[in-house]
Image 1 (cartoon, rainbow, N blue to C red):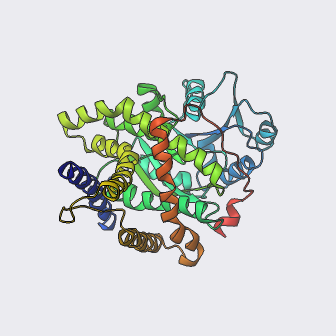
Image 2 (cartoon, rainbow, N blue to C red):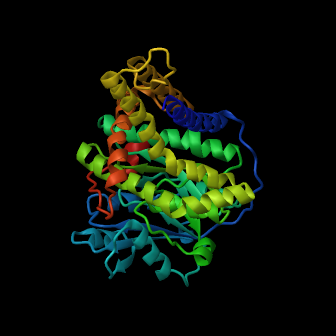
Image 3 (cartoon, rainbow, N blue to C red):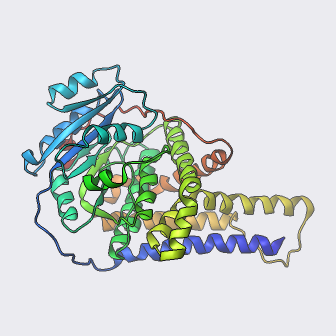
Length: 404
């Protein structure tokens, strides 16, 4: 029994070490890439379900782009709205794609829009959530990455409300860590970045050739896997900044993270076997990275549940004190991990030139944010979320409130 336990825990440890080693490449020097000088024409897609409180600010920030305004159009994808989203979008001179069918997810709304625009003359699609606002240089930075040859590009996901509480601060740090130690590191390794929900771009030729055949509730993670299987390298544009509204109440966060974890399990079930085959046959490290990313919730559950289970067994029936046990439930280990998480958060903020005092709730609350994800990951093993629910947004924040 102890041999099996130790082997499983060593595998979990190696899993973590792999991501740590990959993350260290964030400190490697930037590689120069050859660039074209094309000015791409963008169709900006904004799926919206009753977003009257926030959508105007996103459109206003798009109007302030430094990019030539005759090279982009913005479309609001109306998903059966019952509020004033349509009225506000028209007032802001947005183009309208009115969905007349029942939409079960954001992925279906996007697929509807791609079909609607399939005969258009755009070079690429840019996807935002309706609650976003974007930096003035977003499209210019995106265009640079497309000119480096990338067919899919993820921008830098920042936060509108990092100071609200430990939840919004935890989300902020989560994406900062992904921006730095995953996407930036993978770019410097000449490997594929990952799409993380909003502020990303897809060349039209990719959609025309492969479609947008997503089936899960996490269209971003699933499309990342589909890109890996089709040998499409995802770029990361750190200067293309999107500011996102993060949940600041536990009920909304719980619902959202349940959907994320359920989608991750579904992606593993749907794409896992093919990712393994592709890595095995052609040594595609993008497939390996994507597979390991899908496994993260399961590894977290194992790393948490097994030590506690063993501790209970030891307490109930007793085990030899001489047996070697990797006891990750130890109070000392928990405290050590908490201190390490604080240090990593501070280092991340320093790398991003952020003011530490503005993010103290995220710095100290991130560990709790991650710990509260464990019961979600366990619950979703037995009962997955199988339907999409919109997240309500309330933060009436203009781009000027953030950047000035």
